[in-house]
Length: 215
Image (cartoon, rainbow, N blue to C red; front, side, top):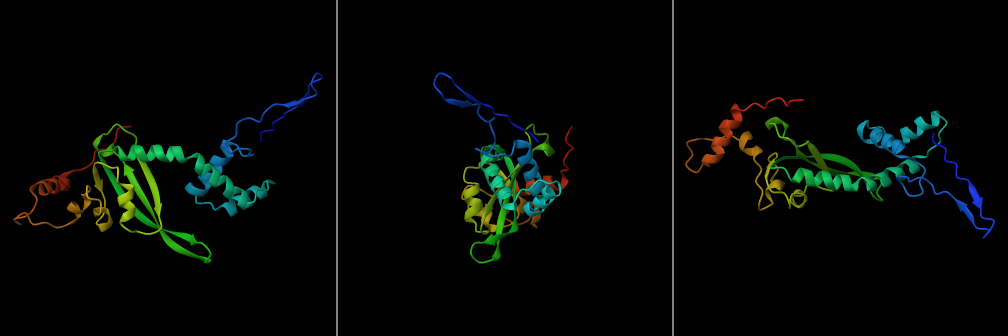
């Protein structure tokens, strides 16, 4: 625990009272430091420890922090991390090839007392299998449903190859074509209208094995 001592001093000439300012804090006029906020976020999102359990753990150590207070700190921390999320998104979209998928998540439905199904979309840039020199990254985005307009909006500035499953929503963007479906579908080389380039890619993909990244 850090204890800040801010002495108040009075000027004998003008009778004004002066006090040293508080050190810079992550949350304006907030008490938690960066270490505590990082611990709460990692516990919640990496270790799947709900805030009410974290509150109970703190209470065992004689530190009373209400769950609502923790929730406020999490929200403020999320706003602080928005520039990092934007930078991650830009980094992912600069890749020549990317990977996309989605999964369901249960979220609270306001004023109903029930939950509803939302979607998390994961967009990945990982060039390690072909010895790429950039750092891998994943950008998560949320949508209330699986409508195709959401991945279309997410990928509107992306220029490259996007590996995805056969979900038709990825095909709504006029300038995108997912390529995972080439590999997962059966094809007949003797079909007259078969795209020769796709056939060559499929043949290579069935032979290709990723190399281990050098550490």
